[in-house]
Length: 200
Figure 1 (cartoon, helix red, strand yellow):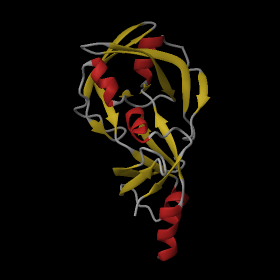
Figure 2 (figure 1 turned 45 degrees about the vertical axis):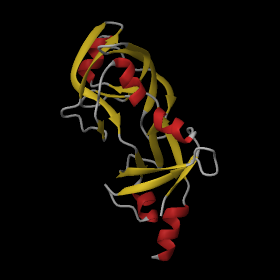
Figure 3 (figure 1 turned 60 degrees about the vertical axis):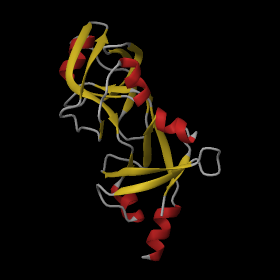
Figure 4 (figure 1 turned 135 degrees about the vertical axis):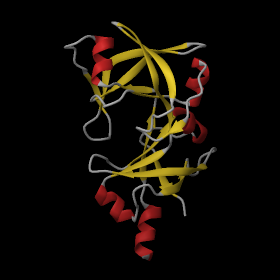
């Protein structure tokens, strides 16, 4: 047990800073970009099977807009828009902090693409911070699905801090990575590719 705990607390976990982005369902993609159009790969992301697209959209809220918001492919069953608190203030909206896919009662948002504007009645969230694990990675660190941990970031830096309420998510489709949004990353002065550690 001691060796297991040592592994959990001493294993470096890479950071993935999540900028604002949009996951579209097929029907919403077709509406915004036209039937027959296909998302074009801009660059890969660390999570297997996902990539950032060349295609972008504009988000519109009661107080403002945010342009050039990148799409993430492949398509999902339901459209989901993930932003930071700073973005929400710019748009004039108050989306809830939610885990991915938990969209019931989330905020509405208007999405503008090259073929028109789409009004999504719910789907806008601020993503809760979380760690992705593959099953072997989780087993090696003694992590259970849905476990809540604390994570120390920016170690040795001027804004070192501990993130509480970090959700652990395990799937064969995942690779070890700590996901936070831009506001949270700025708070600790960390960037994609830095490393954090689970706190004792």
